[in-house]
Length: 122
Image (tube, rainbow, N blue to C red; front, side, top):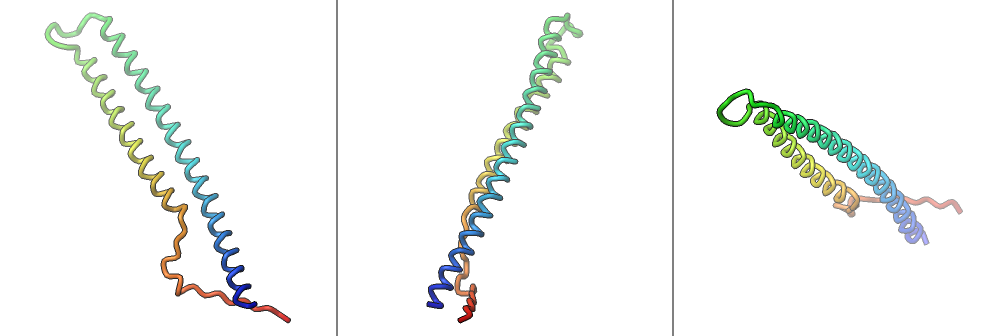
């Protein structure tokens, strides 16, 4: 009887801890999605501004007679930087999502070290 009560209580505690952990992980995933979405939106806005600037520069006479306009080269370099930033963001999100997935799993590493005392008053 006491052993069964202890086992049931232990399972209840484990379920409560698991539920709390899942709730916390879901909140962190939601925050991650919001962060990634906001960052991607900002990068897209920056891209569109730069692309518009490039279109304007291309429609204007070139400042230098030989080769491509240096203003266009600078803006294209900024576009490449934004592409790299987007790739790094995606890598960070994938890595963090994997970490969060691992956090959802509760594993008792050393169950022999866990003890539970249940006192029942008769």
